[in-house]
Picture 1 (cartoon, one colour):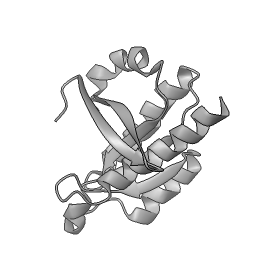
Picture 2: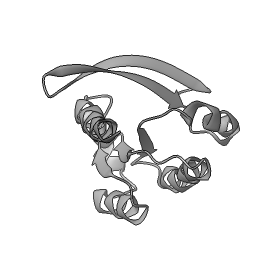
Picture 3: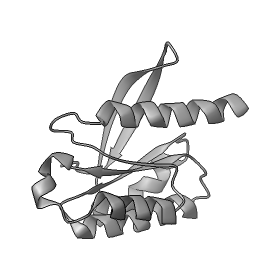
Picture 4: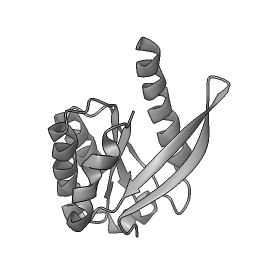
Length: 138
C-alpha cells in the first residue's frame, strides 16, 4: 500500500529507443489527495487505477479525474483495473471498466496484475507511446 507518494524511475523501450519515465504513485486514500495537484502540474501522462475486486475503488476514479480536470491539465490518461489475477473475486467486470473509461473519455483501458506481471509492461508502453506522440507535436 502506498502511503502518501512513492517515486520510481523506469526505462521503457519505444520505437527502438529507451524512454525514461519518472513515476509518481499516489496513495488512493482521500487524506493524501491534497498533495496530488502539486505533483501533477508537470505530468505528461497518467494512470488511474482501481481494484477489480473492490467496487468502491472504481467510484474513486471519478474523484481523482475531477482533481486532474480541476487543475486544467490535458494529458493522456489510461484507466487500469488492477489485481486481474484475482478474477474469482471480481466485483467489476472488464466490460464495466471499459464502459467507465469510455464514458470519462479516457485514452485507453486495460487490466493488469502486478503479482503475475500480466499487462504491466504493456500499460507503460502504451502510455509512453501516447506521451511521445504529444511531445512530437509540440
